[in-house]
Length: 255
Image (tube, rainbow, N blue to C red; front, side):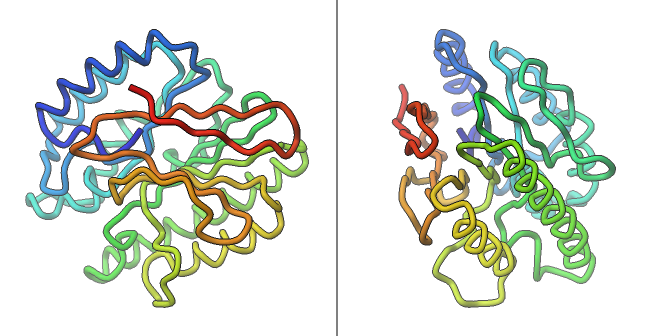
């Protein structure tokens, strides 16, 4: 799931959806980020309430940061970096049951775990042009963070290869805008994903949010892309993988 809740009404719907999730035999649940709207609320109270609600999920639960809860909080007078620090305080927690690892040091939101021969790699790559182009301070943040992202991704993919992972999932909030030729906040990432997709030959899957529309496609050769639903829809996707080293991931909207 991702890009929800954006309002108290959606938070109420999410509460009901959590009850349905808890009734399912799931290996884990992932939220790819954006747990408030692009104009907030960004307050401690909103983030802390989301933490309490997500704690009701009975399965191992992984949350990634989105742009709305930190990079975009300047719209409400907040310091984006202070908001990211707050996010880390609340959500850089242990996730029992899946052997989740966090990147050491500052970027604890970058994670990985392995389940049933599949590697999952979560990255802090938010929307709003990946926090690039607004001012010099944010541009510097973008550069430092993306250096850590690429280090973690490279290390995780090498680990997946050494373990013979049959599928490797890269999860993040942002739509990296495949097909663009501009030097935007995702240009290097698109190039890296294209190279990795060729190397892993059908084993690489990208999961993201940001554009608020469900998609299951192949935006570049060899890369399956899954985009989750987003506000105003409060829905989730169920993913299953059939046996076999080259099986395609099957994704279906769940009620």
